Length: 162
Image (cartoon, rainbow, N blue to C red; front, side, top):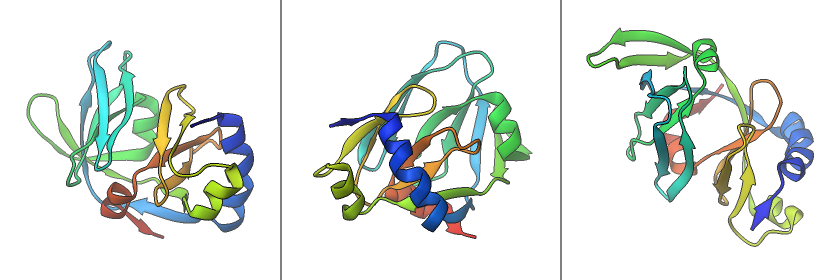
């Protein structure tokens, strides 16, 4: 089932402001400049999450999780969120996040309120469709422009409450 970004925003924004928690990414990531046009398929422990094509200046990021998921991020956003810890070969480097996020775990009651039985898809702030499942974490973007999902297993492997 597809849910509009507007519906997700209208439902989760006040809820997150009222009862969301702050988290910090504690695991390191590997990153390098992506090739423009490079297709990146982000896979989490529950399958394909999102498909994107890199544009000039995007970074390819590899999370240090059991699934080793990869994803893209705009260069300016990456620079605000991560600090380099160690240069590696072939353009890769190790980074630590210095950016807290605000998130809420997706519960059955949220699905019921949205009129959804189980999983659903929604549009992200970067105009891609992303799936979400009960137990995942719904995260508010840093500029309050919209929401994205972090799969439960990967969230628990990489984030801690602040």
